[in-house]
Length: 116
Length: 113
Image 1: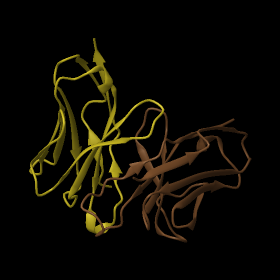
Image 2: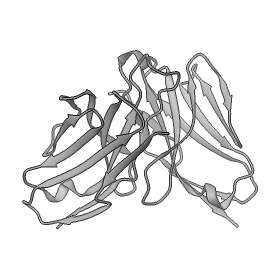
Image 3: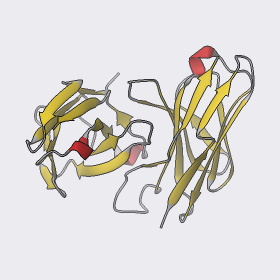
Image 4: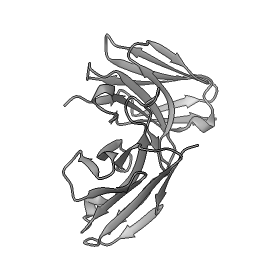
């Protein structure tokens, strides 16, 4: 079966510090991978989307970047965090279009980031 | 831009009653819809999905209804239980454009004992 991991679960960082959040998927190959941010009491905002190694689409302009060094690894980074980067970060995966009969996205447990 | 939205931000339901959560979407090209449940501090969990060639789909205690004429999606939960208390999100997608979901703002369901 497929599983998705995110770490760390919680993180408190000072403004101006760097960030690295990691997401890995097991039990599937060549997945689509996604990073979302969720502000408190709000919906999910898609930040990045990847269909393969080294292929990253940025959905909104921001202070963050993403990388996909391996097929099932997705990393969210920042060189200098802002207060507005605080939130709940969710990684998700799905099958590639045309490779399945369902297209749901499967979410990880999330990382709660607080920037002080 | 086109987006998915919800009519009710909070829904209080008596335990044992049926719940109905509504969602309006504005992109007529969307052909795939999903409902997710998110408990506090956790990632969203898939509940049920429906393609635009269907009007209704049933799962275990849940039913999703799609009305393409008025661009409306609803989730019905039968015999609501305390464990159903959570935030529910609808999401839409245009499958041929890639699997990128657009999420609505969410509805909080509170189940009263």
